[in-house]
Length: 273
Image 1 (cartoon, rainbow, N blue to C red):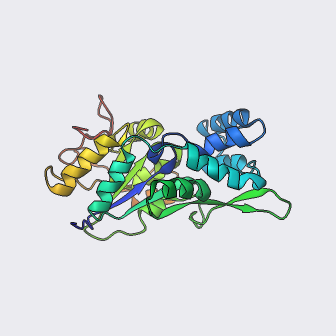
Image 2 (image 1 turned 120 degrees about the horizontal axis):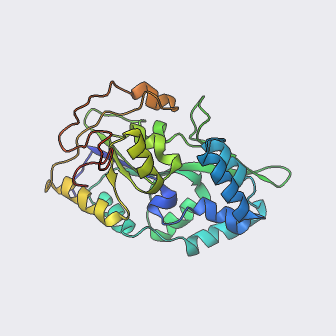
């Protein structure tokens, strides 16, 4: 086994490592009037009326505290990995690439799916706590000390270690991933995160399922293809304080192999992706 300290990989869970957004499905299935609640909160979030943290707290607070065991079993029996995810995680494990799941979802269902699949991966997420009156509330053990935009501060997690030779790689799909993507050295994006990266000028590799990611990583890890270049991270106009701090003056000419932000065809996308 070859060790590759040069890469440290962070993978989002809902909608990325697994196909569906488990958090939304739980609200729809186990909360009274769940579908309407999930739709309303989603609209408020994406219109900018509430933050990511507020959106999740509104929904998670409705989950029934006395059915957590049932919800855990449902997740383990129902939620599939995204196509090719097992092979991707296996490749990283075989090459000794440090890998962690970083999620704005809840620990109980993430653990259930990872245990089912036999992956002993570290993961960072929000948690639920039962209150004395029998309700639940969301705890944010990996939140930012002062910023309240997100439940888990993915930007802080991604930049927690930064050895000189290490490249941080972030894979995500949605709204809770935008700030992790802003500060990662290498980004793989799908769905809403892809749209956000295009709009914001964050360079990324587009993907739908994991076989294309696995093939690209296999080339990097075996030396068959050149590894990715370190990109300028952070956005000066981002609401995320970590992204702001890391932002460097933007250079019009992009590094070799990367498309400049704002390219007409696919803004922010890496050439050859």
